[in-house]
Image 1 (cartoon, helix red, strand yellow):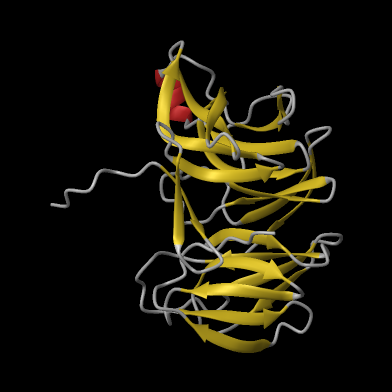
Image 2 (cartoon, one colour):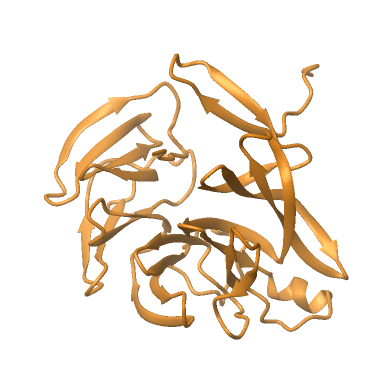
Length: 279
């Protein structure tokens, strides 16, 4: 057994390729949105507040290097995205847990958090039974994925493999499209005209899915399927290219966003299960 103490915090890769750690204790951060000198993050620890399951979200001040304030949101936070001073938080309250807590079965929602005033506003005027677990902000809209079979904790009646477009001002669902199985993650293209969705079943599978990526137009929601002999477990978009973490071949696959042509592969020492882009 290791004698090292558990580390709660953030790790930053510096210019000289060394790691710098920043403690966020008692927070165990999972998702994060950066705004000015604030990192807005959730905690892996699920709490109970007045007999309701809640997730604590913290405002980490980069200069002070600590959590300066916290808020609570009902349910289990699944993702955080944002635009400017507005963060958007997808939070899922399992229907059976809601019933056990003597709450309405529909208790999930996407919340807007004003990072200046800390005001919280539910996007949907009425709580939902299910919400997209992965969300991104694109222009004035939110795009979300009702994940596929990889989200095995969801009940059988939960919507799966569906991409949706939401107006966060009104909570209106503007468009949706059914995708192939195993919809997992999503990213906005560099020009904002397409959404790329990964299809990923489970880790350590020896067989790649025949269509690892779908490209969906943000305007028409037309779908273009991208085939390839790789397992797209993570994805980011930069400078007209998408970089796909290939869990099967331990490499990054670089694909042109317009032509969908694989331009090159970049070997990595470990499977790139999670990718993130910094400005």
